[in-house]
Image 1 (cartoon, rainbow, N blue to C red):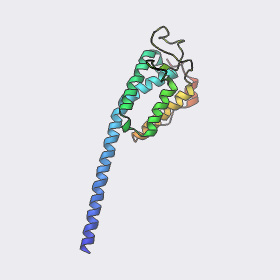
Image 2: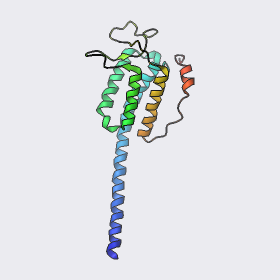
Image 3: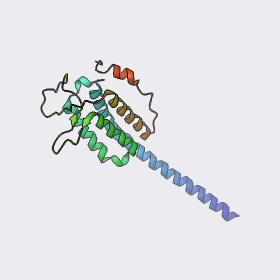
Length: 174
């Protein structure tokens, strides 16, 4: 009977040690994701603001947004293994809603917006797509991305902004 009790104690100890190792690994992954998120979130917010004409969108131009996309793509794709596939798909959904990519060899991604009213309308090297981004699609993609990020980082996301109110006030933010 003593050997059985000893074996049970050893098994419990091994289970606790294994659980502690797994918890430490999960914490390390979440910590790394948090560091990456601190680099990703400002750029994604700029893209969202630019295409949704909210926040600081008037101080953003097409070249900055195109550069931001390139930076984010490099960061996200080089760290793809750190993210759940669902989260990564929400990233791609935002990019698809806001840019036209794979237009041909040597061609930049095109911004899915119009030149009219944009400060870069006379700036060479910026390509615009005739198929403009759908504001509702951009909103939905961005907030799905935010929700997926909250899941990845083990945080509760506050209530999402009201879609209809946000879309109604687009472009009116000063």
